[in-house]
Length: 450
Ligand SMILES: Nc1ncnc2c1ncn2[C@@H]1O[C@H](COP(=O)(O)OP(=O)(O)OP(=O)(O)O)[C@@H](O)[C@H]1O
Image (cartoon, rainbow, N blue to C red; front, side):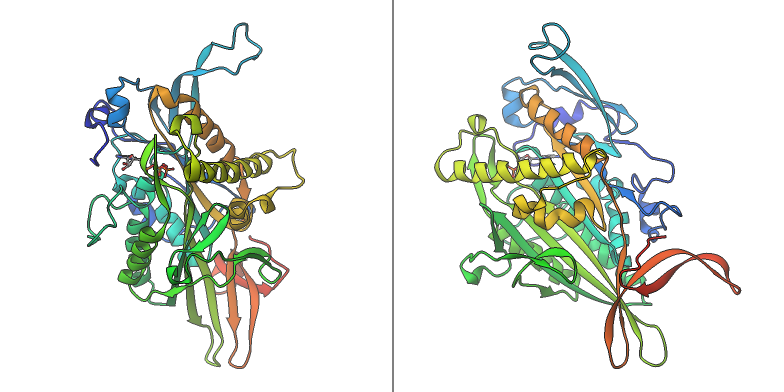
């Protein structure tokens, strides 16, 4: 148990550490065995996928325990979470609702109780399936969302200090990123039918500026975010990408980025991320399709996004530089909130304000494009953080309604030329094999994920 956390708060939970909701045929809540299998095809005809959402509740911190803060979260099971005594909005329809409270029940793909380990999060959040899908050519994103000090960085990379000095890759404190890298290489070793090429990049968005965390020699010179007509998405110009042949190379990328990112201290977290970070692993899988030198290359992607936490500056006692950072963090999270609200409301079919922040430009494809996305909402169980936890859970519940259209991106390379094609997985009939799931290569622009 890392320093600063109250061990008794996790011991007080007797119902196990995980509460999983398994949709029939759903893609999350996988057992380790399920997740190790290749990602199954989505149901025929759907072509769409919901953003999967899990919640992690951290233990009470020592500070919260010392202040005799109450533990206000209950775990009824089945992916449900009950927030006790949440305030009703002032001016609500019920009489006297200004001071009134009500317990609120939420339902997610999985809920991790305070005693859940880092390994539990790898095994039961659905991230193993996401990695399998990235290997197959899908663009996959894991992002952590929540108030400052709620455990986002702890969940993705581990507790503070883990990357100072010599790093032990076997440390039980490692978060989802290091564990995912190990699982990814395990998957690649099992796929000898493809030749894989991995590249990684690591950036942060600090005060609305994109900084390359792998190229600090550039004196933190901000990079431009541009729109690519070809890929119909935003990208960061001149971002450093590193070839990663071995697991150690990916771990070196993680360590380097973690050392270079912006961290600060305020009233609610001594090691607070002052920026949003995005670590991306590009996974190109190439296979020779015919004797005459035609290759198919699948272009998968795995993004790990550690969002800076929303802050009530009164509570964090931010001032000067920390206040400027907090304002930028809150502003970009507000734009993200607008985007999530618009995307989750089927009546709002119009404009989504992606262009209003660098963060939403770079997350646009994960939120509503062709990607597969997992959101990990992190909350504190303390009564003093009730309204922030309620906000996070509302965001998370909204995000769960967003639907994306995952597709595999492939490039077909001939012996003398190379051109892009779109590839679909779906039912194909051949006399030899009958009806079976397979890939179909179609000219760009005639995409249909079936
Ligand atoms: N599940 C957990 N178990 C044990 N300790 C935890 C857990 N989650 C968070 N912590 C501890 O709580 C503290 C704050 O967590 P962390 O820095 O990850 O929060 P954060 O949400 O990333 O905050 P910020 O937005 O300010 O960066 C850290 O010391 C971390 O190790």
